[in-house]
Image (cartoon, rainbow over all chains, first blue to last red; front, top):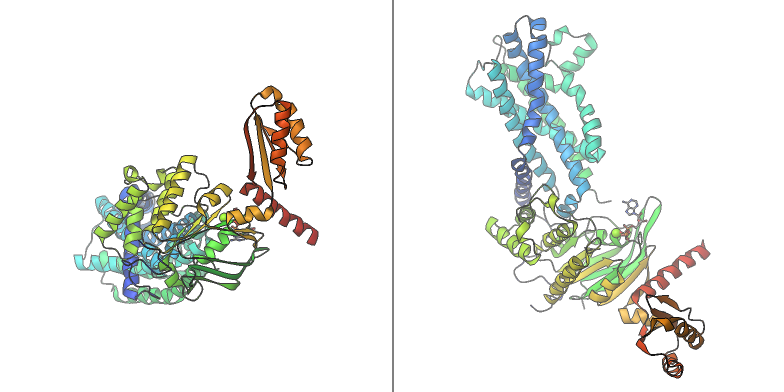
Length: 275
Length: 317
Ligand SMILES: Nc1ncnc2c1ncn2[C@@H]1O[C@H](COP(=O)(O)OP(=O)(O)OP(=O)(O)O)[C@@H](O)[C@H]1O
Ligand SMILES: [Mg+2]
């Protein structure tokens, strides 16, 4: 080859000034593949993530089941949808943790110095994580069913429950991304970051009915989108009476949209700034 | 002529450190520039600004004519970067690392695989292609990192201390690779603390210290600039080392000769000391197995240059 005199070798695509959104999304998918390959290499990760909700289920059902609702089976029907939503909300912390890890290893420097969509690494991290959410949903639900949980609706409602959880998780992943970008280290993320998620994941009606709580806590529980997601998922999987999933589902969707509107610009700003 | 890299008066400040205080240099296409400097002199900062990872406070930098601040995307598609710390994904195999980069750059699955195979072969990593990068040795990781920055066939390559921490064999392997890349027409900016490396690879050198260029030119120009020459004498009979040393001191005067492993080394500004030394040794009947007058090594040049700037700073402060 002759000296390149500052021009590109012949087989290089022309130099562009940006990538199209479609290309950026495809790059996001490729980066999601990166996260999934890791999952394939160490599948234990996903079980570790699912063990905590499984243990919680066992604990609550067998220790408190009798005391809280008098009947273990009824309590399982009540608590499992909540544990699924709660554990999947907690699971969103892993995006931020993964991001903080990547930020410290220099691999993101490589991505950032490549001609790819600027936000592709974030999209990739989130999409990759959502796959873990689906797997974890199936695992925890399957575990609950092995313990005696019964889906009293139909498969379509079950899918709707999964879809609703995924929408909410997607929004929460962006919150986690912001935390990860702000806290910067995986250690900080797994302590402070998860602490920041606690009011959401425990200030809700997962374990006990809202009306048994003190007034100030009731107020928060009623605002907390996790409460509404849980209500919707309960209604979609194992309604006690004829309660409708529609209004808590709409609340969840609106809350997710609101979270996204606030948090996505912040995440992009934090991620894209060049110091 | 269009420069492959053009850096104009770059400055960069981190809270209390002036990392770059106005750096200028240019790199002609197809050549290697060695950016030399001691720890903390601003080498990595310069590379990161070129790689569009950092924003300069002022000044401009262009890669093949594209501005790193306003035309970052174009710059990214022309530039390959190997950072000071290997940017590989430890939880992926060597192969997956390269395929990932290839796919991100728009190669098809099979094309990405082919390119990765090619690069793994070139960097002697074929046998470890299926192992996690986290299990690689430091040298293998660096080679993988270098391979990753070549997947996109860049026109300009920035290497930040590519051989720091490598054993001599891996080091010369990296040197061979860089020579091969330059033969293919790439332009290379190489930062290093090893003078020998710069001497081996670079067409031109830029020495920076405290974020400022303190010297530039070819290796020979820099050596000439500092002006020193070194006389080396090795007596055949180690018993005569003391006598020889006395003689060298007499001839050279204030050259402050030093002895190491039977070799006497002394600095001088005057090339005519050599014939005088030969006569005196002959008269004294001292046989030598080595006698040479050579230009000061880049190491000596480097120490003189960076040491000087330290003193300057102190007197200014
Ligand atoms: N992110 C940062 N925040 C604060 N100071 C920084 C940062 N990056 C670099 N510096 C400071 O800027 C100066 C130049 O650093 P730089 O990394 O460019 O040096 P270098 O020549 O690459 O050194 P080395 O040979 O040790 O790699 C140093 O004093 C360093 O401490
Ligand atoms: Mg450095």
